[in-house]
Image 1: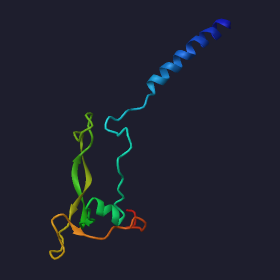
Image 2 (image 1 turned 45 degrees about the vertical axis):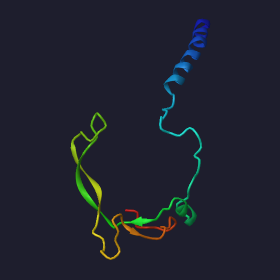
Image 3 (image 1 turned 90 degrees about the horizontal axis):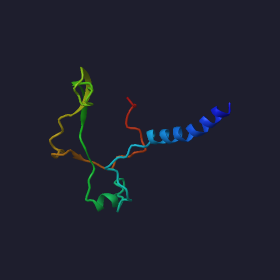
Image 4 (image 1 turned 60 degrees about the horizontal axis):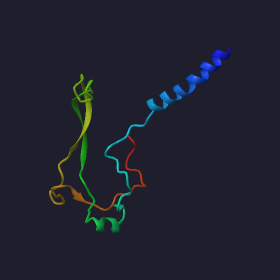
Length: 116
């Protein structure tokens, strides 16, 4: 009985050390290690002015497209499947620009659809 307790006392620190090595967190190399120099709130007129920004939108439609499932290389090299893509719909010629139409800042507090 005493030998089992001694063996347990010797193995416990080794098991804890091995478990802590195996459970280390993944480190992302591109994550910033410092605080940003500035934060700009694009939901405000002042934030848009600081970056000379402008809200734009484009009418789109969801289309069914052919694709491939992820393969062993984690790229789309697996078996064929179907997925969805977003395609721009033709815009009205009177109010279009090349990159979409100008609009007021969208409200993030109101519902935009049925959640489908």
